[in-house]
Amino acid sequence: MPGAADGPRSASEPGTVDTGALTTAIVAAGAAFFAQPGDWTFLSVVLGIAFLLVLLAYHRPREGAPTLQAVFVRAAFAGTVALSLCIAAGAPLQLVAEGAGMPNGRHEAADAVTEWGSWAWVPVGLLVFWLEPRIARALATSRPGRRGPKAAGDEAPRAEER
Image 1 (cartoon, rainbow, N blue to C red):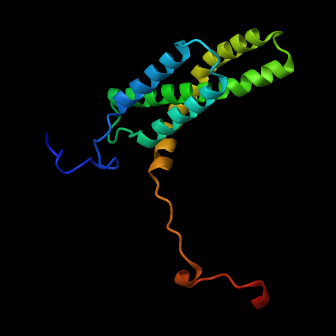
Image 2: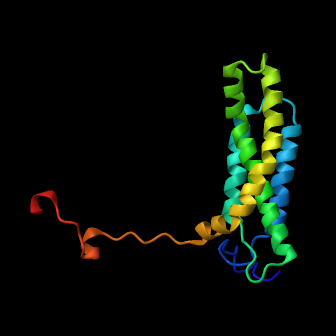
Image 3: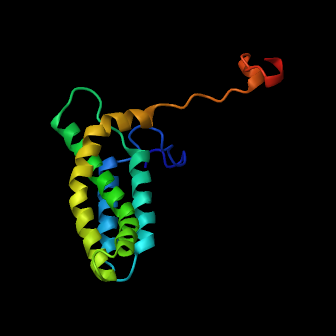
């Protein structure tokens, strides 16, 4: 096995993460999670946020000329980000629906929020698809380094010195 003696590879090296497999795993985990019996209200928010963080951490857009595969990568990213956002927003929306008394009854509110989230997935996915190049650029942009006031040489004058 190449590289096994060298230890684990760095996650920042290109080609070390199969984003397609990662996306599939996220969707499968979400489906398995919601198929379980019980009230998973709060944990679903945590799960949705965790899915979103994993997606953002490992998303690698296709470079170069636009291809059909690049469109599919972008659509898969948009769909799974939208799913993660809808999962994360489900419990807070359910609490708002229950507090507003619409509809009457706890389970009816949960069912209504599930339906709203199912329909919201489409426009959220389209919005993320449209914003994906900007999201990818923001994720790839490195933060400017922190400079100490003495190292910068351009320290702002203190109030007493003005």
